[in-house]
Image (cartoon, rainbow, N blue to C red; front, side, top):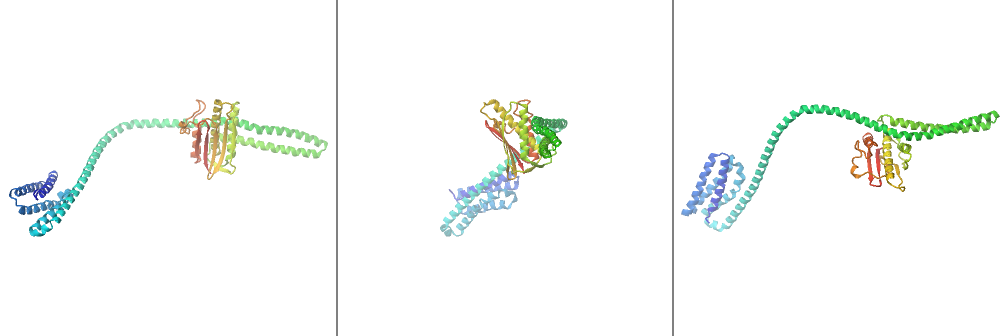
Length: 449
């Protein structure tokens, strides 16, 4: 192969690439000059092939290739091809230096020909590396360009669709305005209905309390009546003793009457507290927290719930257990609201064990437990039963309004949702449930101290 084949191929590659760029970017003058350069390279390789005057044509190859890389580097129109041209610069420079050295000092060139060959190899490696890198960059740039074109196309489609949607929105505005007014009216009616349902739930719980209250209030009233009758008899006896002049016996009878009166006062106050509790429960909550003995509150509502169910259903029978933490003391809460929560959870617990009792034999003992504990900055109230438990598939729904597992007519579905709202929103606490199929459930109230 002739030594000038490499310069010809390199110049051909550079020339074709530059002409393509000039054609695409409408550079007629540069394209014309590059076309003449191409003809010149064809002329040189032809002269070499015909006349074998390599010693003369190699100078022209050097000058032509220097012009082919230096001139485009200085023109702003060819700046996008800068890296492409730079890839060939070392090869061209090495070619020119090699030809000059061979012409000026042939002996030195022969002794150093190995170095020139190595240098030529390095320039070819350099050229391949730069062209490979530029090719990758070009592909990445083309990919990015295609991506931008696609994005532009999508944006245009979005813009067209946006105009269409704006037209549809304009057409629907009047309808939506009318529907909005209808919905607002429906929401107002729904809120009014919900308020009525909540009040009905509240009154229902009050109704459940009535029987229990009647039972609880009967005991202190019986004591008041009994001690009143005994005191009347003692007064008659004291009158008789005084008539006889037995002052010592009369004084002893006075002491007995005083003791009876103290018991009458005690049981009268007990009846008064029960009545006040009923009024407190029926009254609209003021929302004001006050120091409250949570143990006493829980115990009172447990007994009211139990005796209320006993009064409604003579066959009802269940045992209940209490375990109160006496270190809790009084905590700030809204007593009528927390009392409503405890009552609702207790009624649910007694209902659960009653239903299981209907399904089980005599070996089953329905049991409800009420426990209080203080843990750090929280008070825990746990109401547990040994009923059938709550199915896992509905465990996430039990605090939703109007959701109930009771038969139609036996529950509004608002009890637990109201309890959840009272505990979480009004008291900043938590209401959780633990359940195990066939073994029972436990509702745990966490209240901040």
